[in-house]
Length: 142
Image 1 (spheres, rainbow, N blue to C red):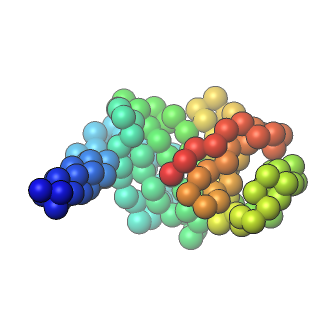
Image 2: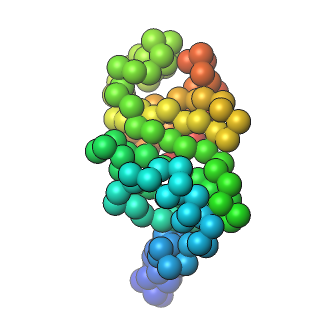
């Protein structure tokens, strides 16, 4: 009986993860047009859905990007992968002081629709979020 419940659990969890990916045909035309206008040189575009928003993950000049749009095609935020050394010094100091045994795997600069910038430092199974000055804001678990 435990085996049956385990299989059902895996199928339910697995199908909910797949539901977040979206085929390009299912993305509203105004969202695809907004991506093309904002990032005309985007390649390797993959679509996903976060609640009511559409997220495009893509490359521009071999640099990973993502952009989140609402259903009308308005840009909500962008995220650009950056070198770890490009993080503010205070971010690096915070990680060293609070996560001494962890290494930063990836770093990103996030800009919302109003131009507000935050930084993300990914360490083991979590993202550390910092404001534009490098002050710690929150932890987001993967």
